[in-house]
Amino acid sequence: HQAHLVTGMLNETLMDNNEKLFQELWKTYFKSICIKERWNPRKHRQDMPVRYWKYLTEKQ
Image (cartoon, rainbow, N blue to C red):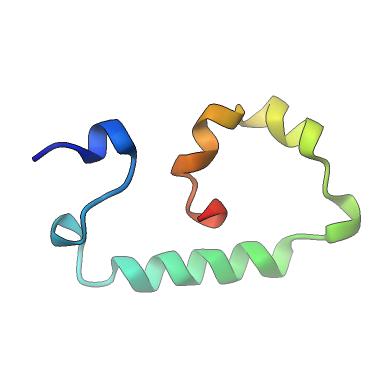
């Protein structure tokens, strides 16, 4: 019932009707603002620890 609290993955039955749309919009936005030449994984890990990456929409 509340497995999403452990896994971080929300079951589609619990999602709003527009959730998939918003996830796709966020991924598109993230890709459009990302400058590959400025990608800095070390800084990324400082700002957001790796253990939380699995919960980020743009990483999926």
